[in-house]
Image (cartoon, rainbow, N blue to C red; front, side, top):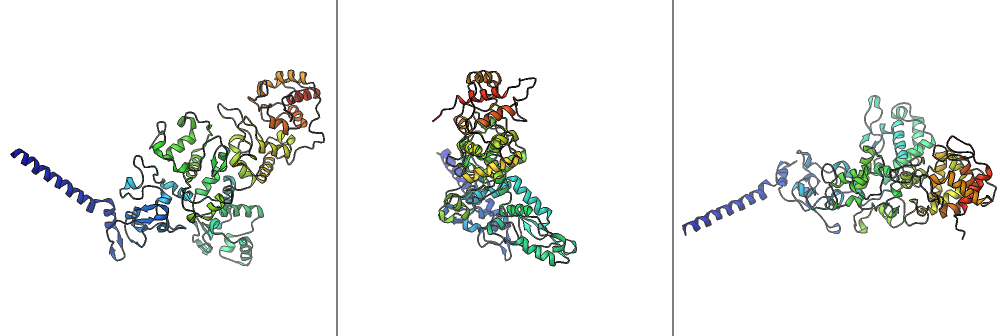
Length: 553
């Protein structure tokens, strides 16, 4: 009996001690309480209590402001740790949208790791701070973003023409200088692409420069030619108050990623749809081959370096990206979130994309080619080789462009190459529009420095060669690269109905005769140590043999 009494007594004491410890922990030692005790407003200590932002329409209940007190509605703490600081200036009031909508994490939690989503099985961890503006992709779909070369050209011109002497862009510029030059005389242009800017800026600047005898107008401004002004306008149009994000998107538009992946319904089908890749649940990913922490960012970065190492059956080649390019792609992919909010909360750019079909990429040829074609054909149209894949042709090759008419190029892009990785961009859902195809063709001609194909006065089908002799010549000289049945190997597939219907006999004859400089395709009008010369009649016979595969409808 005495033993049972002692057991009851001491177990009760232990239970009381645990309850007391829990009460002390909850009411005095919680991290958010310690943080709030350290906060000092103008009138002294702030009131200690849980703070939260509730947005019923977005399903957001965010208690992040219990620690980040300076970001809570109505709170203005003064001195204290960095965590107590007010939110940096943004377009939206954080109290209107909450925290997790943009940053991710677990809004109801009040412990650091829980709140940041760095716990097992939480599907939406916080976006890494170095990519903080990726959260803008939850709502926004920035429009008409150019390729990275055009964007950087505009940025360099802004620097070269000393625009930052008077204007601030993404936190840079507008600084005081000796002699009174500079000093933020002009408006902040960080959001010029979203809020708009004066289209007559150059004329007005030039008038002020002509009248300015001294000061910033004389020291920091001068005439700018039209091409450079267009590049500067392109850059200003990309400034939407999300530093780095638009540049990351421009990089994505330069590497040909849409050639295999769809984003927002536009792009290819060879790879997975990337529209929501920034919201992938890390708990569903395989991290066995991923160095470092098991985070979505690390998984995406390693997959960009070596796709088949991370996903064994991946068809994505190793693109040879630099670490800087991987970091940029990672930034953009983490922004691909597109959370399903009520349309009343959609910004105008997202409405214009999803309801009116506006493009997120610029419509110029360089950008469209970069977004859809560069991964396979090279950024300069030089052709590409990847391990385990058939080579992709050099479509900016001058010898090709000299014999390929605009109609042939349009037909090729529009109808693709059935059976190969070249899709029918003009016929598939999420493909290219006719105006965009025309821009790509013009861009190819600029890349190859061939303004137009050589005139061809002959009818599309004029060859009357010996098919049997041509077949023997094809087997001897062509089958090694193009396959015995023209199915393609080192060289492109010739037994392809779209190619055969679009190509004229002159195209076939001239391609065989002159070859393609800089590639493995020789010109058979001139002999070499590895192949003999073919006469014109023999070349025409080879073209006739190729024609025998065409199915005439």
